[in-house]
Length: 163
Image 1 (cartoon, rainbow, N blue to C red):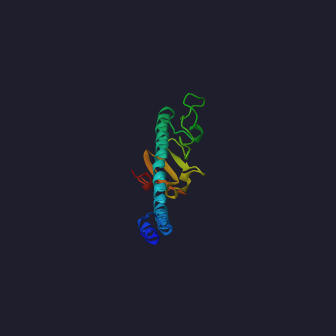
Image 2: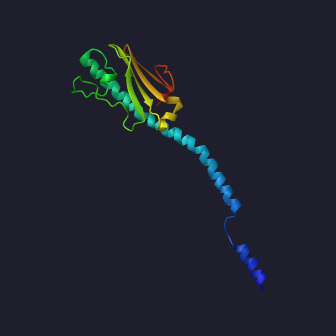
Image 3: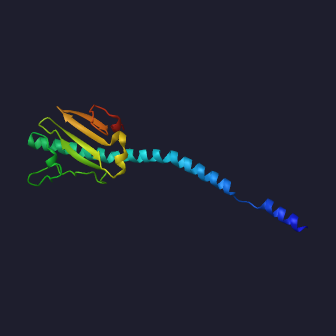
């Protein structure tokens, strides 16, 4: 066997990737990641909204207990005070457990209140432009819901609250 034919046979049996093939694979992976990552982050933000829903629900329940004992709903000053403290309060947190949302009560009266969960700046929820703020309004015994990034428009149903 000639030395030249041995080297030629060896080149034919060698396997592996060329640099061009490797770069094509890297480009394909980068393209797939650029498409999938925003969708993934939207799913994460949507799942984190459940924390705001739970906090708003807890405030609603505490408000009904408060109104049963006091004849009107509690204001933002009574949000974090513990029920046994003087003056007593709702005993709720001003932020959600993971700190993605801040909770506030407004427009409290004998017949209603508004409670909002606003995404905290510096968290991933701040980029949730469709539902950066979530709100619940009790007015005359009727609940309405809102969500958005600016002034909230309350209605009996809202897309941010879709189950």
